[in-house]
Amino acid sequence: QVQLVQSGAEVKRPGASVRLSCMASGYPFSSYYIHWVRQAPGQGLECMGVINPVGGGTTYAQRFQGRLTLSRDTTTSTVYMDLSNLRSDDTAVYFCARVARGSYYADFDFWGQGTLVTVSS
Amino acid sequence: ETVMTQSPATLSVSPGERATLSCRASQSVNSKAAWYQQKPGQAPRLLIYGASTRATGIPARFSGSESGTEFTLTISSLQSEDFAVYYCQQYNQWPFTFGPGTKVQIK
Image 1 (cartoon, each protein chain N blue to C red):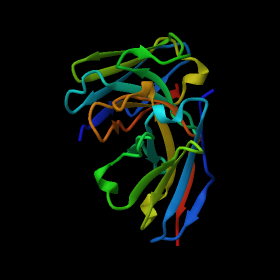
Image 2 (image 1 turned 90 degrees about the horizontal axis):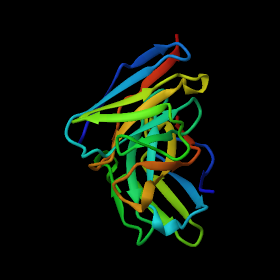
Image 3 (image 1 turned 90 degrees about the vertical axis):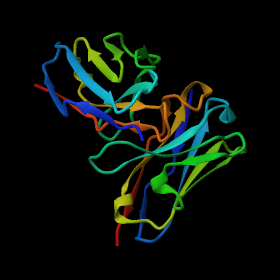
């Protein structure tokens, strides 16, 4: 069965960086784009960026340009999210999500369990 | 950026009743709209894609429709497990955007 398993919770100081991972299984890793979506406490969902596991091409939302880097390791079917220069308003649950049907413009059919990142001095 | 708005913010419904949730896109999304259900402490779950197609394993009491830039999610007879927050999403234009959500609570 399709699974996206994310790394554990992180606590970071303002100005630090964080790396989260998302390990995929149960399907051909290279056939599906992966997005990162975040959700601040009590708030809605926000798309941050997307990676194509074939070739590693990325697209980022403008507000994260310069701070966000997505990468992947095809040997372990893992996608990584690096977010730098953390601020208190980066405190959120971060989800990875698979794009459905092998398409770029599609819904998200499977999600990771989420990783809480807390930014606090 | 395509802005998605949802109404109402909160919907109070009794079990067994019908719930109707609305979502509006600020521009055409070419039917590339989805609905998700999220319960506390859980990841969102895909319910509807392509504005009206039920995702795999989703009960028939959930249905989606569209009229231009207006999208509707209908839950025909609310079950106890349906009380949750529902989000609409457009995936026609990057960045893909979500509405602010509708919380369906027990009346």
